[in-house]
Image 1 (cartoon, rainbow, N blue to C red):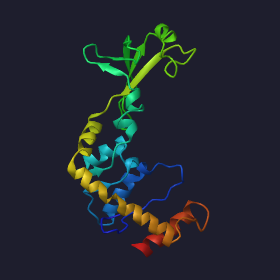
Image 2 (tube, helix red, strand yellow):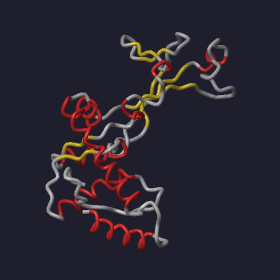
Image 3 (cartoon, rainbow, N blue to C red):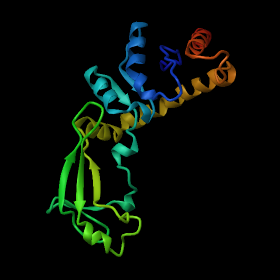
Length: 210
């Protein structure tokens, strides 16, 4: 949708499909319809690595926050292990340092690599803080950290900018348009079964709503 609330492109998928996978198709459809795309404003679903790369390659500003799993990691701040800069190792809440590390995964446009830190399992078995940290019977105890790619680091810095913060406030417009489609024009209920029927219904509503 354009900033003037004109629908420039749409795709219809089954419910289990991820929204972010449609970004490139929507951009290309919008360009084909005669619109210039210099900026994209969306939610975190659109900030996957492939979309960040696509936006950079096409000189498009992507105003979409990174998924917290990427920017902050899977654990709450209070649960994080401490990193010892001198040793280059993580230290667990009990004060024990990792004994070795290993990189896992392959570099790709879709995923980042992970650094896994291994701890002495024999010490973990008898640790006073093992509850909730060490799983009885486990053969290893690890702590993994995602290695942020340059594109993710750039996006994290971009999120801190006043430009990003100001422009992200415009996202309410697409939510407003979605609400209009569902509540005023009946797009919350499928009139027929199957994707073809939903696509036809979508085209009619797109023409009707602009």
